[in-house]
Image (tube, rainbow, N blue to C red; front, side):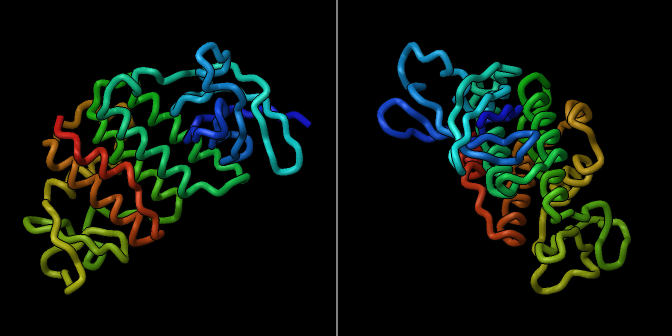
Length: 245
């Protein structure tokens, strides 16, 4: 039995001498795994189809619950992402998020289209890769059922002025008057970035001019929120935060 899927490569793990096991995020069938044989050989015709970020139309052979790649036609390689280390690790966080949060064998069209929009912006936009990632994580968390409230205090519904706090259990900003013991103080500029990204498109991010430190704090907050709400550690975030440029 064969099936045809439009999919993005989330992971490619070495298997045997010359093969890899791909984790694919498909429009038609959510996250699936498939073996791709001989792809580690120097002259392998399908080498392109086993690269992270690569978006292809795959033809898969399916026997029981096992899949193998028969052929692949490239739709978009997103190659420039792999040429820039900051873009690469920002993209890696998104791929890791999808792999952790999207269920196997379950269609998730909104998440698929979000990932494609993010990868295109990451590849071709002049916007900060970190700011684009903030936008992606806010949208992806919302699709996963963990929507944030960052435009006003979640307790009194008033604007957060001067000192800002964050309630990780409730997933929202808190003003100084409403803060409680477990609420964590955050930089007001971090909250401004979260609020701006929440209401923006990926195209809008091009006009953002937040300091690197604030972008890093926003990513760290969002990754910690994913850990608190879902118990998922996004390991690629640490690699991204180690980069200074």
